[in-house]
Image (cartoon, rainbow, N blue to C red):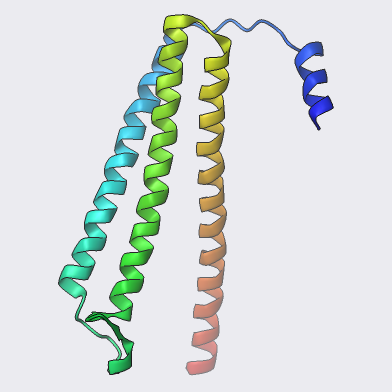
Length: 155
C-alpha cells in the first residue's frame, strides 16, 4: 500500500492551480457550516440536560426497578442518545473548522501541506457523514421490518 502511494505521488503528480476565490469560498463555507455544527452539538447537550431535568422522574413503565438515582431508565437512555449525537456533531464541526483554518493558512503561506491537511479533515467529515447515513438506512429498514411484523402478528 505504501509503495502504491509513493508511485502515485511521483508518477502522477501534477501542478494544480487553485484560484484564490475557490479556496476563500471553501474556507468561508467550511467555517460557517462548522460553526452551525458546533452550535447544534451544544444545543444537543442542553437538550439532554432538559430531558433529565423535565422528564427525569417520569416513568413510562410502572416498575420501581427501572429507576437509577431518581431518573427513569427511559430518560437516561434518551439523554444518552442525545449526548452521543451531540458529541458526533461537535467532532464534525471541529473537522470543518480545521478545514477552514488550513485553507486560510494555505492562502497566507502557499504551503501545499496545508491543502493536504484541509482535504484530510474534509475526508474525515465525509466519512463520518457516510457512516451516519448507512446507520440511518439500516435503522430505517429494521424499523420498517419491525413495524410490518408488528402489524402482521398483532392485528
